[in-house]
Image (tube, rainbow, N blue to C red; front, top):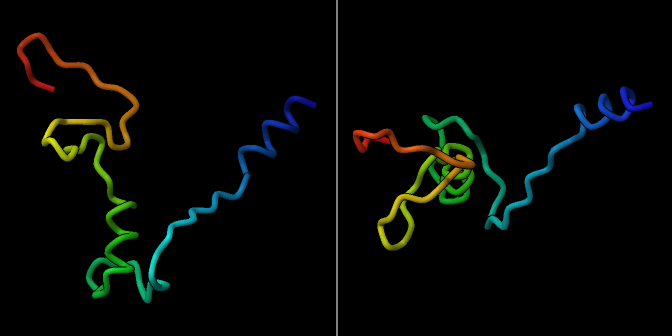
Amino acid sequence: MILALASLTAHAEVVYNRGNNANPEALDQHKTSTIAEANILADLYEGLLVYDIAAKVTPGMAKSWETSPDGYV
């Protein structure tokens, strides 16, 4: 039974709902030209760390990180 539940969750559909002003015509970076496509691509390519509004490093896709003793991330 547990194995069956694990296999069901492994194949669960992921739906990304984003308030966007239009449907994208393409998601190929070389073929996009609209803000709607740029919004989705920015979400898809979010970095591990990002800058917040105060220019401080905050987690983007990273759950956590460590700084080495010499101060490098």
